[in-house]
Image (cartoon, helix red, strand yellow):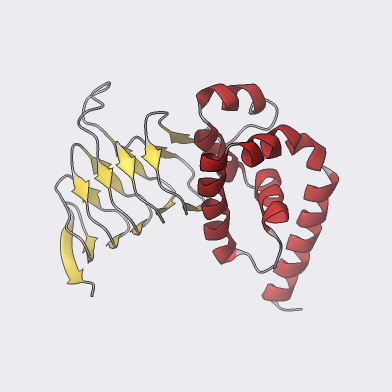
Length: 204
């Protein structure tokens, strides 16, 4: 049996377990259904996560699957709902403690998280279709200096171990390579690599 078939069988089993334990997520589903602005963002996040998922399910079962099986997704889900609601419903099915999103960071829909272990996101704002991996650090130079945080545009993809620090602006449609340290603005439509980050390719 090849790897794709094995993965599909594993995902089917995980979906079944998600359905069996759906009662754990009744509060989550309630807030998802009755907060329309949050619902739209979360739905976009689910759609982004489906890029690496080889089963076709409706929106409800996809949400249930990721809530049950992905602690990183739960962290993002609780961030979407806000600190008060997340405190009420997140204590018994927590997210990942090594993946931190600042409460004051606004993030557009369609976030794709590729194992963001040991990642801290403290940007002023992040656009839609953001992708990041593990060991990502986005933040300010001084603790508490929330005015001088990065602003990240739409369709930005970060490789492993990327650091973005200070009041820098990352444009739309940018790919930042693994190990980059970004301390200066990056324009739209480009690929950057290195420490310090430098542009190596323009995207059309």
